[in-house]
Structure formats: structure tokens, C-alpha cells
Image (cartoon, rainbow, N blue to C red; front, side, top):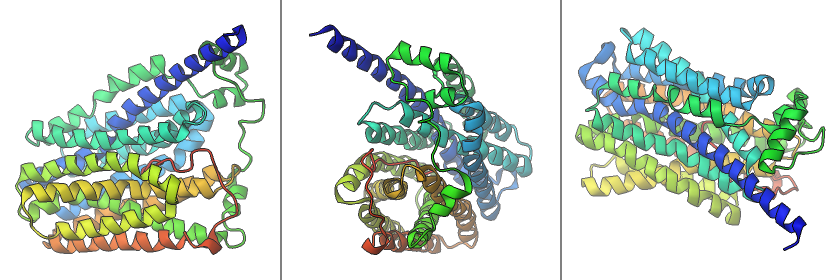
Length: 446
């Protein structure tokens, strides 16, 4: 082996080691993100049964919407914040915010204070995920971006699984569950402060070239040429590009599909335990369904992207939403417990990755100049569904008809199916292709 070949190999190893460090730390933080996001739905049946803080189904839906509205604001602000103070600082701050907000929820003496805690938690939860995805994508080894980003997304569902176990282990002691959600402040934040590297793009853009060069040299990462890291399309110009020619039709269809998809993700997943409890299942089983649906989500994230690469994101996403609608409809019928767990698992497999493939398809069809804007806005518009879904679920459960809840959420799946199918029309697709990992499942909460 020649000296130059040996040096290149050593640089690649060091670059992979840095990527592994970034992915590992971000995976841990996103895992805590998923725990905090899903713990409310896991303890909600017990809170409703004991009327904790005077909560009712209608008020519980409002509280869930406060959290997702906070996520909407957090997600929209995270880009500007990370450009100003850096990816690392945004990630650390977001994690600290939702951890401290969980402490506020754990000590809440009234539903109003608890609601404020969930809203503030949403700010942190919404700000973490986009920044973590960006940082991981920047450090992903060349040719492995899809695999790395897809792997990161499994952390959110893994956190949802832990939320179910936490509720079971603590016998649904909701205050203790929220105290457990404070642990990222003492584990994740210190680790990120000490070991998480800043974005090389950010360092170069801010003129901290010496710091960027030192970090790149330490891990054998290749620095981009000056100016490459600045986005070519920004602000209103990039947004206007999404509406040129026939693209406005495709943009609108993607926004509507994302609205339906996130309505399902946050509405159905939050209210699943309560609706299953109302359908006649015991409390332990109802919480166990949270574990099952998130386990299905992990499998779906890994399978969906591979199929989308081969057959097209819009096509697979449409099939996934169709299967989600069928699964939710089937759950309205009381079945043997083992069969119910299987249906819940399969529904989760299709539900979460169906929404993720909307983002993947948008990224695939966008140009380098407006990709960030396109994905950001389809996520932002979808967040309105994330706000509406928990509120809608609360109203349906408050009316005492769990069957109506399953029906309405199944129809939301059909709604998303229709519009994501329309985006697959050849006449609406731009004549370009992106080969940089287009099929990667992108986060559902970004």
C-alpha cells in the first residue's frame, strides 16, 4: 500500500469515527425527544381515570395540541436559531428546554401549569429534531446519508417504546413519569456539551476557519471550498420557487398530504391508549399498544426508505397510508388480544414511515437551491395537522364514542392517501433527479 493510499484510508476511518460520534449522540438526544413526546399519551388513560388535575378528554386534547403547537413554533424557529448560534448550541438548548419543561409538568399543581409545561416542552422538542437531522446529514460519510438519517429516525420511535414501558413500570404514576423525562438534562446535555462537535458549515460561515480546520484535521473530514456552504436559495425567493409554473399544484398537494399525515401521527398515536381502553381493553394492554405501534414504526422507517428508493416515494407513501387507514378501521373491532397487538404493530409500521416518505419525496424532487425551504414548509404546514389531531381526538373521546374516533382517523389516512397519490402524477413532477439519498426517511416531527 502506498503512503498516499494509507493516508486516505486513515482519514476515512477518522471521518467515519466522527460521523459515528455525531450520530450516536444525536440518536441519544432524539431518543429522549421521543420519550418526552409519547409519555403524555402513555399516562393519559390513568390521568383521565383518576381525574388528575381535573383533566377531562376535551381538556386533554387541548393539552396535546398545546405541545404540538409549541413544536410548530420550535421547528420554524430552529433554522434561524441554528444559523445564528450554531447547530450544537441549538441542540443543547432544545434538549434542556424540554427537560426543564418536564420538571414543570411533574410539579404542576393545576392543569394550567401542566399545559404551560407541555407547550414549553413542545418548543424544545420541535427545535431539536431539525437541528439534529441537519448535523447528522452534514457529517454522514459520502454515499451513506440515507442510511445514517434513516437510522437516526428510529430513535424517536424507540423513545416512544420506552414511554410505554415507563408507564407500565411506574404503574402510570404520571408525576414520576415526567420526572424520568428530566434525565436528559443530566445525561444528554453534559455529553453533548463535552463531545458533540459543531457543524463545520456553521464554523466556516461564521469565519471561524481555524476552528473548522482543526476539527476537520483531527477527524480527517474534508472541508468544502469557501462559499459552498452558503445556501443558494434563501427567504422569499426560495419559497416563491415552489410556486412557479405547475409546481404550485404539487406544493399544495404535498402540504395537504403532510397535514393529513401529521394529524394521524400525533392525533392517533396520542389517543390510541385511551381509545383502546374505551374499546374494552385493560389499562396494561392499552399502554402496551404504545410499545407495539412504535416498534412497528422502527421497522417501517427501515423498510419504507428502501422500497421508496426502488419504486418511488409517492407510490409507497400512498400504499402506506392506505394500509394505515385499513389498520385503524380494523382496530375499531374488538379482537383477541394477540391479534390486536399484531394489527397495532402493522399500523405503526405504515403510519410513521408513510409520513416520513412525504419528506423524502419532497427532498428528492427539489433542487439544491430550495430543498431546505421545500422540506421545511411541507413540515410546517403539516404541523397544523399535528396541532389539530390531538384536539380532535379529545373531542371525539369526550363525546363517548371511541368508534367514531377510529373512523375519523381512518378517514384522515384516506385524505393523506389521496393527496400524496396526486403528487405522483407525471404532469406534476419536475424533470430532475437527486441521487444524494433521496429515499431516506426524514423525520416526521421536523
